[in-house]
Length: 181
Image (cartoon, rainbow, N blue to C red):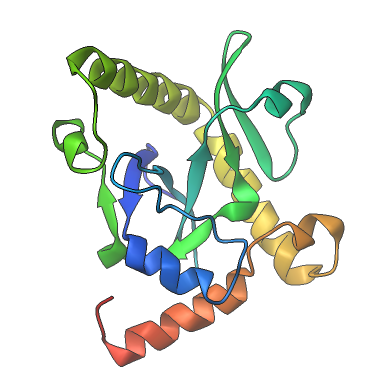
């Protein structure tokens, strides 16, 4: 299975845009200069591909939702900190993912002051502790979801998922072109 801990990653915007050409369910990560969309990785290793899942900010609707096969709530007691939509996980070339280091976070996000930066890093730390406490569950759900999409492509659950095989095929093409994005 994967390494002992999941970690934060930042993906290349050009790479994600390349994948979005083939599948509109790949989440947009270009929020301008002031925002990053961190990914959790590696949640699944299959067919020589590493899969990463984006974390999403809390919305009011998340308090009414229950966890499912493709949805994980990152909760600290009764407060939801973020959510993982496993259906939006994507295969990523290692050259297109960078570990998010807190001392370099200003390269990805602008902060008004040191206090705002500290609060954001504290949130990331808290989320990651909860995520790693649930690591096995998250990775098992990712694997099951992958095979659900492959084996039952027309199920309601599969329809919410990125097209993993199509993305893998286009990544293989990118590898054979040996091009950089």
